[in-house]
Picture 1 (cartoon, rainbow, N blue to C red):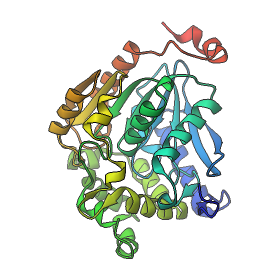
Picture 2: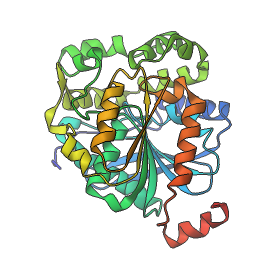
Picture 3: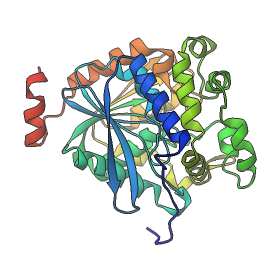
Length: 337
């Protein structure tokens, strides 16, 4: 990593940060979730990764999509009883420190970040639930450190696989200068703007109207944090091009075919990042993948929480990891069936 790497640190005394934390706390309370907050420090680059821990039982790592915020997982986490959920806020999102993604090897950052979280929580090998960019990060981890993952649940199309990209408004954020003008337009400032903005990821009008205001309020606060702006724009410039994805970070059939882990794709039939046909291609080229198509968007559990939770719970029960550290085994032995 470059010695001159720009690190965007989260100022815990900033009023916007305090408001975002309070909104997140209200959201998790709305869904009946108690959680603790941890900080994992990555050595190179030196960034602080904010991690939420909820529930008890066998551990499950959750890696979010988008700019990296954990809060969208709240409705799903509420239905994953009996698990110890380790929910990562990726760099730049959810009050984690951010980096300029154009100055780092994003694949190396992904693998090192997730490995650091596993080591900080004394976890040898776990199942992972992931979405979108978090899905890409998880696939990279599976390819480079396969011993750390027992199984995967990929919710929605993983970012940048098999020629997929992103909707046009997001691709335009890859254009320098123009992206600065577009950022305020594409970032919600009110609850109603947040509700409307979810249409960009394919959420139906019914879903958008059914989401509680506290979810949308948290979205507004988290998306308007200073650290998020810098990290998000650099991520868009790095991962995308005006007409597609950055070829350097795309996963091709040969890449996916190397992954031996059990993988469940839960794919929304209105996923605007990748069609159901893309899901079928992924299932066909991977060694141990299963595709389940559900009614929903790129964030399918918002549209279809019950079915996504049912499928996820069932898959986790089938693929519980037998590999735990001694301390983890002691903590969870009483909860494993």
